[in-house]
Image (cartoon, rainbow over all chains, first blue to last red; front, side):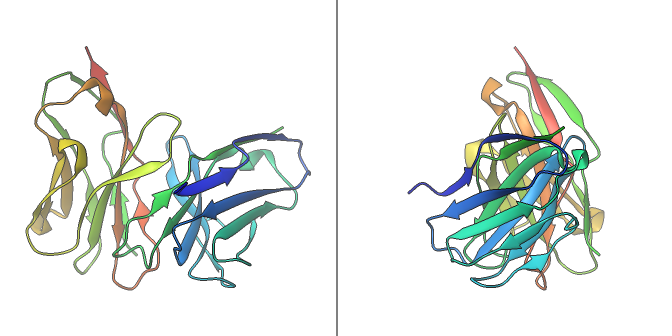
Length: 114
Length: 113
């Protein structure tokens, strides 16, 4: 099993450009999450999904959109990138609610917005 | 709302020495608590978790943590650290009403040879 994979690993964007980050999991997990990690800030939840076709806002959702069209994939979109979105982005998945279940993390995507 | 505080941003210990990383949480009822580790350039990996029962929980890689309700703490310990333990450690809390968990800001552990 590959676990949780993220594409791409690195990306550089110019301000105003758009992009989509792809997260895929092969563990048949119901729940999927997108976090951003910034120095001294820990991990902050952007959006999450509790099942195919559902999404919900996390702590820092502004400037991002997500879609969960297939159970195994969770896409994170930036419609108009800003320098404040320079960060490392992590996707995670869990079998059910994180209250009881371990979250499995992908290796991260390092995004730089110039 | 629940929150997690990790008071130490950086900790340095010598290889072979004991380790304790502090974590305090804020929540009115019994929380569900986790410790995750992040090695450089990697995603996070679960070390251990506490849901109920015995307040001393054992995890992977020789780590343990103790839940102390009176102190609202869930400190991580290891009796003898190895150079490979150098990483960032995150404490996290969830409640039985949430679909998500809240992470602390992390403690970066440095190991001296």
